[in-house]
Image (cartoon, rainbow, N blue to C red; front, side, top):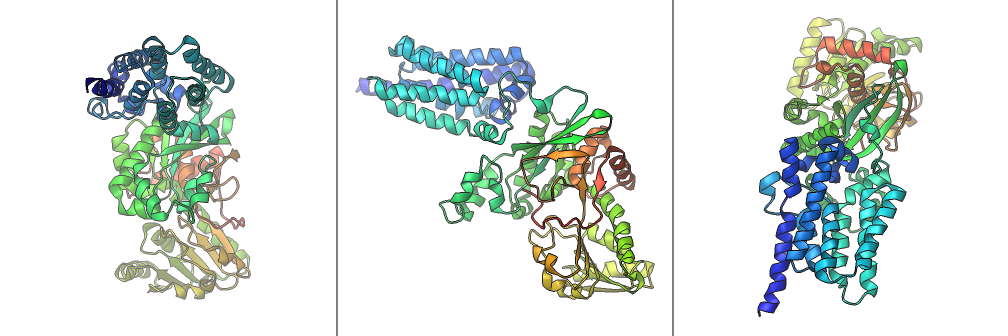
Length: 564
């Protein structure tokens, strides 16, 4: 009976020792920071070392080696003790109360476990040395710590297949747990964003001529979740495969924001360069709207990740711009990085684009004083601002929205200022077929304007995010579609992620994030519901100075979702 209980006690002891966050406690004591946010699982090895310093990183590594040695030695000296110690390290329970989830990867612990396996488990020096040698060779060849670690464990697994007395089961489980633990690092390898060991992180370069910014987007549809190269294979499992929409929606709130790409090739005046770290927060638009607490938590996690990766500014794209009091709560939670919802420059692009659009309309024979214009989404602040800009220029203005009372109040306000213009309100979008000028700015996740709504030769200004104009509208004879809030940055922008704005084009909210970083005008961040006129003017002036071009004409851009 005792002989049967002792191995169980040993495995439990190995787990407990492995779970004790000694390295995390040392990091906290020496840096004063939660080690959960500084680990290589989220940031990569090089970024972690940069944040905690090389001496602290080496000390934490040596402590983990010692912990692995003791855990396996006191746990019975066998492969099951190695597994228990590793699982305890990467999936602790009680230590959560001490330092939060350390989210370690257990590389140092495995080195100590192998040494203990040799001394107390009777495994020969050759057998424990070969995995270490493979680790070193792979690390020297490819430079990826995670891949080298998995290669070493895989070597141990191959040894278990041919060596009597070395059980296969615990090593197979060890390999599986390690693959799961390193999945983020493996994904970054595939996406090209994982930094090689010994190479300074390019996105956190101290080069004074390199400006670092970050921007967080979200998927518009479930299929968009798997746009990155590392996730593309999952698209085959949906929707006809084992991954269904219900399951996906259930698990998305449990994930953290991830770093998927670097937007590069942006050239500023005086030889400066600008890089943007593209982060994805995996919530769908309706989930962001309906679960504000979850969404706010995810945005805060994204802001902290952007900060730790070395960005100076962090932009909220798409529906993220509505979260946390439109960024105010996020800025309060993460005060050491400048956060913006992009509202000022977005408003500025509208201010700059509409006069040019009206001028082009007239140059092609349109008589503004006789023209009927329609504004879709007129209950919103942006759309009403557009209505206010054009009300004095056109003969008739149709305000389209969902709240009839608010529409009437808006119409009365405009009628008082522009008595010469006939202003009507409606909740029926079909009425826009009468308009030669259509302005649309809704936050509907699906298109609202279709071919049947648009007459021949109409001009459409689409400021919706996601876009309001269905692709079928392009088949209308003589139609002009002008994308609102779209900007071309200077240089030759390069990215592996299709943001659906067109080749080399970005949304104005991202451009504001870039401009704020390039000018270091952190006090010009757009936060909260109000946009200051002086900030709008600032971004318009600096955008021109830096070489950002506001798109004010139809460039035959694809009509698609503007986020991931």
